[in-house]
Amino acid sequence: MSQLFSSVNIGNLQLKNRLVVSPMCQYSAKDGFANNWHLVHLGQFAIGGAAAVIQEATAVSPDGRISDGDLGLWDDQHIEKLKEITEFIKENDSIPGIQLAHAGRKASSNKPWVGRNQFSPADPKGWQTVAPSPIPFHSGDYEPQELDVDAIENLIEQFGTATKRAIQAGYEIIELHAAHGYLIHQFLSPLSNLRTDSFGGIFENRIRFLIEIVKRVKQEITSQSLWVRISATDWAEAGWDLQQSIALSQLLYTLGVDLIDVSSGGLVSYQKIDVGPAYQLPFAIAIKEHTKNNVATVGLIKTAIQASEIIAQKQADLILIARGFLDDPHLPLHFAKELNADIPWPKQYERAK
Image 1 (cartoon, rainbow, N blue to C red):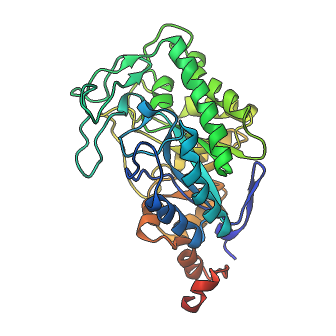
Image 2 (cartoon, one colour; image 1 turned 90 degrees about the vertical axis):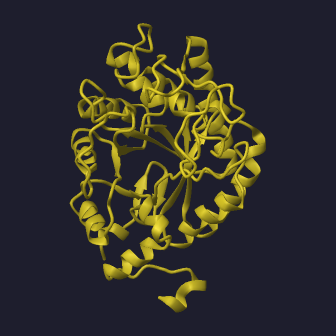
Image 3 (cartoon, one colour; image 1 turned 60 degrees about the vertical axis):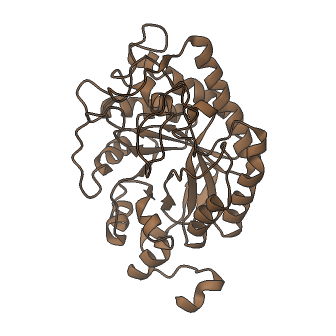
């Protein structure tokens, strides 16, 4: 049978195969609360055979949302519906995960199908954004407020309390979103972090915010698995790059992070990305070759053969797919059929096998 459908241990968890649903924002929440859209959206992937389902970027504070439609976990009241979602995923033999995030300067934005404009802090739909330095993402965006050290320490604590709530809600994978130009990534990159204090300047200072979040989150974790998503490169001159990503990954391994979820880009509007099939795979390969980390790869991995070869060649430990699952929620079942792998189907669906 294809190694794509072999089990793998990541931290304390055993995943039944190597196909995982990547976090995908739905912009369908109100005041951070999940609803039946999220239950059905995430639940269908568990039915379809995914080893794990990672919930969309979920804000640790109200001003950490990308839009007013983002999920949140800054209030105990958010837990009830999320628990319903995690229970359904587990009942269908998959592992529920959550991506904890803060959008930083990319927050206070419109839903993408309406328009990607950023709302003014004075707009009823908007709020004041924050960042390591007062540099907008787009030239027409509103200037973010530079975080002082007290505010940074408060954010670190918010990641910790959000983790506690996530565990209460039943999530078994906690992923920290340190990619795609959101707040943690903004601290990592010298293009967005111009600070001169202990959270800016040299590499050790720019990674400090993430490192302190990891240490705080680890205080809450018992049997859960901790993952970190990074952008391996900014795709921009003098920005965050692969060598820094390797150094960061090596350090995260020593702190007990179980997996590096390797993506790229998103920090600056002028990035130049050479897009193609599995275009981000070389970054995952490099991190896997130069560290002891488990590694996941993402980005335009569209076929069963392509995914199977990545695992067979040990280029990555997991394949995270987003758009492919939107197109086909039963993607693992269909990949298995294409690769002549006999895997269990839900009994309710076996008549279609």
